[in-house]
Image 1 (cartoon, rainbow, N blue to C red):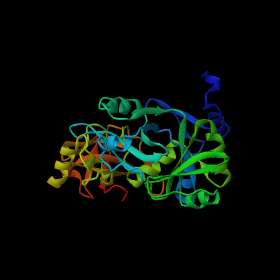
Image 2: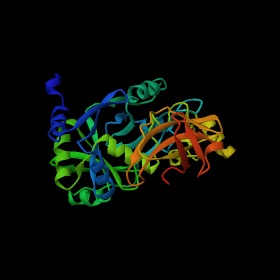
Image 3: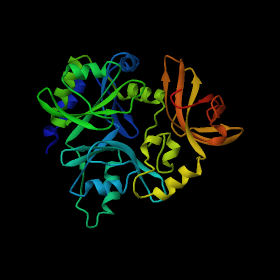
Image 4: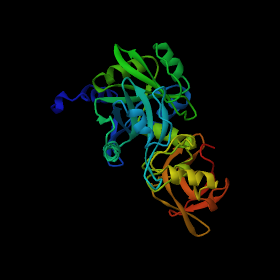
Amino acid sequence: MSETASPRVPLEGWHDARSAVRLEVEGRETITCYGDSVSERAALSETCGVVERQWSELLEVGGDDRERFLNGYLTCEVSLEGGSYGFFTAPKGGVLADAIVSPSGDAFRVVVPRGRSAAIVEHLERFVLVDRVELAVDREHMQWIVAGPRAPRILHALGLQAGELWSGVRGELAGHSIEVIEERPLGVPVFAITVALIDAAAVAESLVGAGAEPVGFDAFEALRIEAGVPRYGIDFDQRHFPQETGLEDAVSYTKGCYLGQEVVARIHYRGHVNHSLRALVLRGRRELPPGTAVRFDGKEVGRLGSSAFVPAREATVGLAILHRKATDAGTTVTLETGDEARVLEPGA
């Protein structure tokens, strides 16, 4: 398919018509805002925003053995009856990617972090022996995230509904087939709408017409960080165990065996981890690069992940996985920039 015939062309035109600002984020061009990230952040907290999910990629896992196969490589319980959230883990328990897994027709739709889809397919293909499984990166669909206190009302007004957490419900919007998934709340309700790329602009226009405001990556990141929810690739990665992320709901301790389970279970039954996710709060606005060292009592106890300025607090909030000696709420730590930060529970 030629570039001019790309299914993204109508979508890019929709963004351009709203003065989208594109900047490089983590090595990839990203729509960071539509001119005013502060008002966009307010929309997410007070009304409703719609943002292209540029920080994730989609996989499709089909075949008769898809349920059994995925259960062998994810920490969550995978079921044909509903969706779930979990981790792909390495044999030694490190997190290869987090994933939203939901049944979609005769396949599972799997949402993984941006830049990880090909790696996860390659990882899984190593274990396909006699399994009737089909693995593919889905480049024909995308997701809109609809978030804010008015999001449920807007979806309802458009005749859409969501099922249980992480589970997709099929519907139609602007004459196009879609799926709606309710996701982890970030202080406000959050929904993902999956749609074919070629139809994405029309679906977004319907959402905006119903009251959702176009929102860029910066505003949504600020919402996520303030809610204390880490993102793979910046707040945690293969060096971390599931329990260190604070996302305990991603791990089932009652399901059958999966790759890395022995290590993950041993950590759980030992009763603690040496490192845990925490929020760091600094007065005023700070530009803090990911990877900034965090020190306590003169020693490095972790490195900063993502951070954002939160106007309501008049402070910058960051996320970091810290050694347990510095995880008590109220602890003061020092960044290698010389800034002091107060340690809090994520989302506090």
